[in-house]
Length: 390
Image (tube, rainbow, N blue to C red):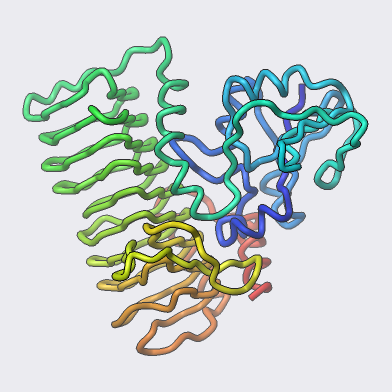
């Protein structure tokens, strides 16, 4: 079976700015990305059907007996069974008409078009990520689901530090090389997962559900609240709650990040703070790339939604429900605007100007070098394409 995760165009635009630089299925929610979940459930390596400028990095590998799955869908046991038994040239459709999966021998260059005569209606509950705030909302349940899948039948590495206090030890799992020093881990109300070679340093408090990815570090004296996922190769500190960092990002210093979603290769200066609740307790409105205006999220709690490669100066303050694009350099006094477009440079007090593309690429290249990775022409061309859209 050949697994291809496709972008639904209507959903993709609603998940910008994160899908400027990745397919929908490369979004992290819980411990794993959506693609990693499907790969584990179906025991195969997925490929992607996405925007043409992303296909070099995320290619589609077609072949006979190809299973096209909506990249916004979170897998579960019942759903996977329905997809496994889907007949050839048939489509699995949710009650509201959303295409979940399609099996075919044909090589497709765009999202499958279901044939009503071969439609199978989905009877299982189906969690989908269709709006940027739904990444945050689904995170707690997805941490639990991923934790159960990743740890089933396995034994955690021990916590050997005698100065670390543990609550709910049966809900804590450490991969090989993970370490905890003189900290408090409370997993009584949700699991705590520490990836390979992850570190929780002295004086930190971690409350589950919580996930820390491969090689990531919780800096000393940090407060990690529940429903938080830190992807691989991140450095995290201060106070963080109800938030997701996709990977390779750094928020090492004091300051609050709440009910937020942060892409890859981002950096926060010291004392950066986000507001996640309005003073009048009304629903938070967020900039929508689909409509070009503020839309009601239906949520009382929503903080910062930041695209890849964005950098934040010290003591920056973000309004409740701020959406920041890709490769932004934001700094300065006062609360920042509710929406900052990609490739912008500046802040509320100084005003914004376009971020020169060559300078932006230089900074991105340096960020890769600092992590021992190569910033190649594939990465460069994606950012140039995103920059040209602004």
